[in-house]
Image (cartoon, rainbow, N blue to C red; front, side, top):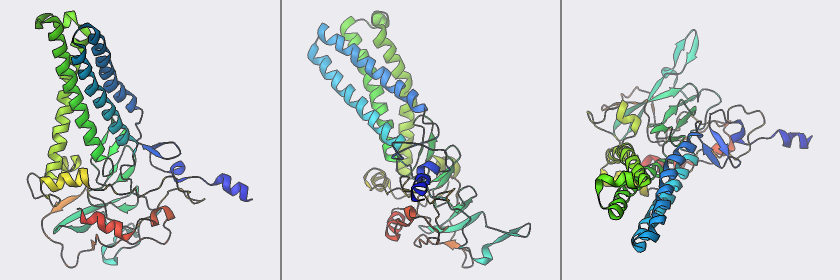
Length: 360
């Protein structure tokens, strides 16, 4: 009998209701469209490797020391680019555990009625740095989304500090992989500029006349043209995300909340914003997908509606006024768990939640 129970026991990642893809026993968490990584890898690795091979042929022809020094940074940038791509696409971006049922920790006055049945209000008020933030209820995950969190329709998960879903890396870009994503964009931009510049330099050095460059060295000419086009897209995206970091916004907030026209409750200065993204400790995942799931679980995880520890939401609406005394507002400092919470979710302590809120 015990053997049969053991055979039926499965890990959380095996029954997770989201649309993620898992590898290595749940250690690697991909988005729904992880197959797009193959295209991204070819678009980066193909030109970079071709450039290094072409430069290697030039080493024996002319100025070997110069071309050897040109190849080394190109290889390093390519390796770094792939490393950041891997870290971005294989990490849990900050998936929020689901509730099995709608939270019951609701003040009676805040309940709504529909068809003679109790219905939870679609929004709740939370205080963030003296501002009222409206957080929305997610009918799929059965929870009130934390501030700056949002539900990704592609991966079918609520995600902390959701920025956007990137089809090029096949993953949600959010709290736990955003620093690696920005580094990936930066390395891609530098690699494009590097290959473009030294393709032109190598052609000018060997052939001397600009108007016959592409005809005499088709490979370097095509690489230069490819990188010239790519750098406008990748470089523009890199500049845009550095702007978002300076103003402490997410991509979804920049399109939905329009903080340029009103005060941003999360703005804290350029230096502090950069420190928050690149130097602050990345919080642990809320879900250990390698934990054993309960035998009868269909949806894994159960957290209370008052767990509002994440950083942002594209669905939230901002107002500069404080809530009335009679409003039902969630307190960011309180982290209460339902009685049927899984062990994998209980391990998130109140201290960790408070530490995350202090960074808002």
